[in-house]
Length: 475
Image (cartoon, rainbow, N blue to C red; front, side, top):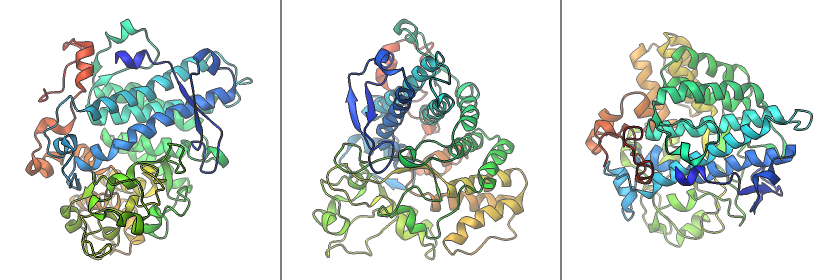
């Protein structure tokens, strides 16, 4: 945390918008805080800096949400860290943990700085003041939500602080992070954000995104009545609908901001350094040069996130989602058989790590399935099955009728796995529903592995186990 609190806010702001939205910009460096916070545009650029940090950290989200679970593995086996996380043998010194911690706290630091600076300005000067505040709070809440899901108890930082105080900031219970930061921030955000955006603002968080994330938060802490109410607000708004074809969700020749889109982490291909890694990272190396010919992916392949045959076999053969989530060796690429690959991130990629594929944080099918889960927990079985069946009807699967509450719960859990496979949800779903150890014990999981280790460098910097202990079970 020493480096975190000494960072000058927003040393990289975004300017010069182009075709895909507000992130299609060039970076400008060496901007001081005194120069930055004067106009409405300054604060808008500052908020954009929060999104920029999220682009970095979400590049590794598949490690936590997919590779850790039974849906995915590091098939190539040449990355020590990936192997360790896949096999529940990770150490606190793994660089990915330090990077994740630092970048989420960078989002928090930037949001805190915006919130502390903007108070001094009247709304007549900063015309979008309410929106900037709401957006900063949404992004801070999202960062904290992922931090507690990954690491458990974390430091609570809601303002700027001197480095001396940072050394004294211990970890606090995650339930306090939920009640004192995440939930209040999202409640404030939903009232200050726009319902939709146009032009270069498309891609910013909306009120629907805040409500959807808040519904997921309530579901995670098992407040099912509030989860149902909030998610029902999203559905009742009539702002979203399922795409007619499941495959269109992953067709990157089409607009990603469609009727099912709620909130993505935005990436832009085009040589500006703003593309995503997913197309390169997820395609098997065994495709070699044929990835260029058949997938139009250039620059190299990683094979870091390969769907498992366990996932493939769990699908019904009639489920069209299977072939998109897990492409097996049944398809030959230039007469070369390859490992399994998810087709959800196959996009034309002109050079290494320059894919246009976004990371889908929340989409409408996720909301329908969360609502179905909350309604079932609240004893509303008819309403629950109706929402579950909306998702199944889209892919022409038989609709559920006459299930018991326990049967419905199992069906909802299964459909979340099939609908959202390889989108970073599986591990977090297993943990929040208490199924992780049952499902993953055979993969090497121990009870303490429901959270990851606190990065070693943070433990060493604070050097005070009474306020900043390592998670139980880790070195």
